[in-house]
Structure formats: structure tokens, C-alpha cells
Length: 509
Image (cartoon, rainbow, N blue to C red):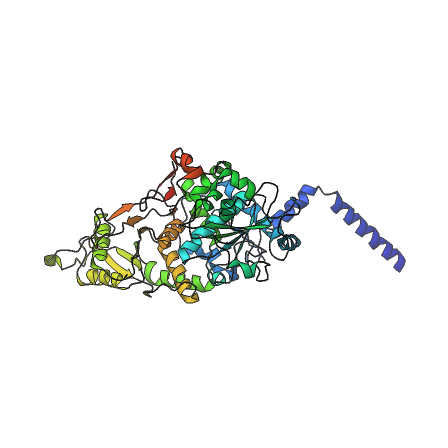
């Protein structure tokens, strides 16, 4: 009897397996695909930021990724299907080539040789190093990531500063952090224009040729880079650089506009970004998800000071000069701009002090970010002592005023990132000329700010400010000469910046 039962069970098992094997492969794939759209609690995953963000993350590890919609209005700028598809493809590439993989190990082993031994490497990399302040870093990191997307490279970021205290991992099931045991780690800080592997220096010394491909090169992309360094933006040089397995980049610029003027990149970029001035807006929202500690700062401040307002105005004040601080002419300029553009109301006449208690006045929250608290104190006292001419209630708030920039100090940088995000959550924005802090805020928020011109001789400029032509940041020192000079003249969607004559920015035309 037992043998008959065993035989029956065996036959039944075989029949079940046969039926499974006979199912069309597409049905099995669809079932797996369906399973991937559910979390552990079997709730369907929602698209994040219009499909911009991957959802394969643990929600508790990065609350900002899932909770941003609770603070931020939906962006009117939707990512293209091409961009979303490109990002999903990149995530697969990063997972295959990232740290800890066999491909990464093979690629790092090649760094022990002066030149590339074979041209069939499956993975190529670009290493980003943080330079200057937080705004500069975020701008250059987006630029390097876009370059990685365009050239099928894997981006790895130097983690020796405080990047892990600021941002969550952006790519699922892998890491974007350059391992501390990376073979060139001890050399990274020595990479400069004098380094023999600096691409600009090699060009200057005629030390490159089409038959010998170095295993790694250093790219110097700064506001004061030499003409030879700017050859990076030339089509022919990109053909050579495309063969180099490892590129190390140091930059303090948002060099995206110059990538648009490389002919082989332009076609791809137009497909990825049909609305050309949304590059930073989409890529920054994709890359920069604040850590839980920073997100706590953002959400607490927003809920306490901004959430109740009918309208939110952000004012970012950057004062240039060795002896920066509070200056009356800067305060006068802020008022001339904000009141002249009807961003803030003027004060009521002294004889109109009495307020109409029967009305329900609108509340306008004003968020001020500056190293110096005197600017927000002045605004706060003005609207406390006298009512506004419109009857609006004006509440002024400044999260911090630390007086001295302290880059690479964990808490200082976390506060700076929180303030950038808070500015991006406002409805209207005023920024200071050439401020990368302001550039990042406007890009994240999809805002076209009013830009305060830089005062000369302590005199309020006339006009005091100008409305930005697009939300995209400015490339402050563009390579205006050389291989891109003719392209600039014939590219209508790249224009000179409002706040800096040597700068270029993307506009949508």
C-alpha cells in the first residue's frame, strides 16, 4: 500500500511540474513582473515623482524618497519616457558594474597598469570628487552624472567627506560610494593640473596618441581651467576619452550647458529632455534624497513655519567680499526688489494703523536664508511694528545664521542642505547673483527666481533684480572660445546668464 501511495504522489508531482513547464514563458514573466510591483505588505507601489525614482528601496531607510509629496506640490514638469527608461537602464548598469561586483574587481585590477591592455572592457567609470561648498558640489555632481548617462559610464562618488550624512543612496541594490580601498585613493587628493595624468597637461605636452590609451585620466573642470583643460568639451577629445576606463573629475561648475554643445551628445539630450531647462530639475530630484536626519530638519521647519501660510516666499541672501555682513544698501536692495515686484507688500501709512478685525487676512510666510540674521530681523521688525498695506500678515523665519561658512562640518552642511530644500518648497523665490546655493534651490523647486544684482560701491543697483529666464542653473565660466565658440552662436537654447556675462544657461525655446 505504501509503495502505491508513493507512486501516486510521484505521478502527481510530475504532472504539476509538466503543467508549469508548459505555461507560456510570457505568463511566467508577467507574473514575476506583477510581483515586483508590490511591497512586502502586498500594497501596490506608487510611482514616485512621475516615475523618476525607482521604488525598490526600504522606505524607513530614506523617508524623504517617499514623503516628499507631503510637502512639495507636484512638479508641472514631467520627466520624459526616454529619461525614465534611461534611468532604469542606468540602475541596471550600476548594479552590474558597481562596487563589490566581479566587473568592478576586474576594472580596478587594470589600474595597476599604465595603459589599457584590452579594448573590450565591459564597464567604464567616472569618479566624482567634492570641491568647494555644498552648492558647487551638488551642481558639479549632477553634471558628472549626466555625463555618465550620456557615455554609459558608472559614477562613483568620493565618500571621505560628509556625503553619506547628507544624501541617501540613489541607486537600488547597489552603492554609488567609491570604496575606501579603491587603488587610487591615496592619489586622489594629489590630482591637479601639474599631475602627469591630467588630460589638459597631457594635451599641452603632446603626450597623447590614438594608439596608447591610459588606464585612467584626471579631468580639471573649474572656473579658471586652462584652454587645454576645456578641450574636454570638444567632439574629437570625447572620442579619445571614451576609450579610457577610469576618469577622475574635480569641478566646481554646473557644466551641463557645454555638454549640450557637443554634437554627439546633443541628439541624445534633446530626446531625454524635450524641455531643455529641466535638466537639473529632474536629475537633482532623482539624485538628492536627504538622509533621515536632514529630512527631519526639513519637515519640522516646514510644518512649524511654512505649512500654514497661504503663500511662501523664499529670500536667499549672499553677500560677497572679505568683510561681508549686514549692509544697509543690501537691505534696501532686497526691499526695492521684493516690494517693486509685488512679492512683499509695502507698509501701511502711520495713520492706517488700525486693522479691520472683520476680515480674514492672508498669511504670507517669508523664509530667509543667510549667514547673517540681521536681514531677517529687519524684515521681521518691519512687519511686526506696522501692518502691511494689503492687510496680509507677514511672518518672517530664518532657520540659522552661522555667519561663517563651515564646509565639511557635518551639522553645518546638513543645515545648509535643509535650507536649500526649504527654499525649493516656496512658491516664489529671490536669490543672489552667482549663488550656487540659490541655483540648487531654484532647480529643485522648478522655480524661476528674481535674481538680486551684485551691488557696486555700496549702491543699490537699478533695477535691483531681474527675473530669471529659466529654472536651470548658470554655468558661470563657460568655455566661450575654442571648439564650442561657433556652436554657441548657432544654439538658440543656450544663452548668456542674467547675472554673469561669461556664463551660459539652458532655456526652453
